Image (cartoon, rainbow over all chains, first blue to last red):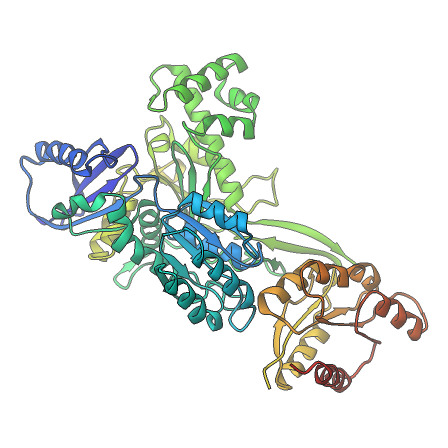
Length: 467
Length: 139
């Protein structure tokens, strides 16, 4: 038996998956509370000993790969020029790299911005601005302002290529670590975020892992490859695209409601599905990740309920407003709470339905009719996901729900909101064994086994599951 | 001489793209770098594109008769964005009805456009105007 060990250093739990690379099955799983703030090895050892108990001793692992979202995740600040253009492209690149965005800035940084950035003390800063051959004055000015600041984190320079050398030199001369890479937006109609993502990941592996104390576990593993959200995105991409020897599932979306945020990933070009529709706005990333900071099942349950309305949650749960408020107070005060009683299940299910519906509505594009003197014209903003063939739910709130299909169905396109380009009739599945991140990691070394594991362990739910 | 960058597009809720495409091809052939925003472009998007691309001029097309409404305040938007000196052209069927061209031209020049072009303008005329205006502001 040939096994791989996949580790997720999460903010609360260190989760292990021992995967059988030949049978493409999950050999064992274990988790223990994370101890990143003290010594990461304590939590890892505890989880490993639980794993050893399941496996009857710890075998030799062919690969030992990890991802991390511990110690606040990969905290990033982005800087661009025009808010809707290079500043937005910078945000897309950082989110795609699995970052937690703590600040996004546009135009010329003023002294207060620079002070604010230094105070935020991000793990990495992404500095963009100008298309290739376009504006270089602003990125150079911002580079000099950052060079003079107290900021000490690595800086990825991904703006106008004509300004890159000078911006990098200005930062290096001031003792900052600056890494030049290709422009995130080489032309107004083109997004090129992969080089910036690769640069961010490289810094993450070489520097951030050590800064967060995760390198103390380095004797036990080969690599900490990427932030966990990036691993999920890589897993989703592998499932969608397939491999030369494996047919992919085609365009798909992943929803991941967590305690603090709800992530949505979509893989696909998202071009208009109907003829005659005009696209408006920035080109969309093929592999796109959005993070909704106000939609969480626990830490941000209160902000979510205020966004959706207590009455709506209560009605969906079949509870009175007072009962729903009591349930909300309970989960906010005890973020580890798992549902036990009927009312608790119903409340949690209403919460997760609200989270994924709102998160998918924000992630998906819109189509609206604009009336011109030549007649009505359909204008699309964002990605058209109506034709997506597969939606995967991951995370405990969906996987452990009593009826995952009834949860996932709420995010589908609806006749009452024809302008929202959400998936229309996808197959629904759950990532029951929490393998998407593991597949994303394993894909870096054994893509075929990674694909077979992720694909073979998808659990289809709803009508499609029985057909 | 450095390559000049031009932003083109059809402003407002106007879908007439053909003439704008032809103009764009001619401008590229003449050696300009053309950032073509296409049809249905809001005024603010011309300005945003000009900032990122460090454009030297914005060429606004309007064919459906609403140009006067769409272009109102265009120069002010540019000034607000720090593009005080950018060259601004407008052309097409700028107004409805039969209005004398000199009057129409005056209204658009008062709005802050450097030049306005009547219907039927030849590509060569636009190229000659650009050459003359850029020669006057040689860097």
